[in-house]
Image 1 (cartoon, rainbow, N blue to C red):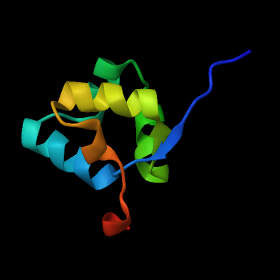
Image 2 (cartoon, rainbow, N blue to C red):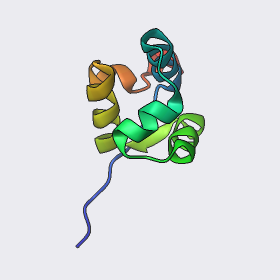
Image 3 (cartoon, rainbow, N blue to C red):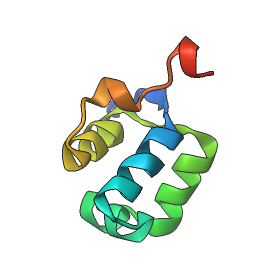
Image 4 (tube, rainbow, N blue to C red):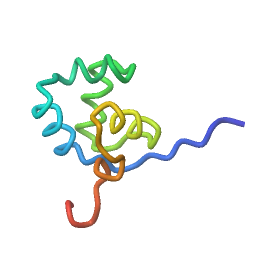
Amino acid sequence: HGEHIHIMELYSEKIKRDLKRLGWTQIYLAEKIGMTRQGLSVALKRKTAPLRTIGIIADILGVDPKDLLLTDKQH
């Protein structure tokens, strides 16, 4: 059986702010997490990503994965 993938709501604005803070481009982040720029761009536009991917992004940005998830307050 295949691995179950949890799709989570992504707080795209937080990621974009963190990229700006670090002086990174989406292309740079995509390369660091092993995604294509297009794949990352689609995830940010749709505001969804697998939990595993969100964890990797959070680790690279140096933030808590919970900070990258949309909560009711941010909707």
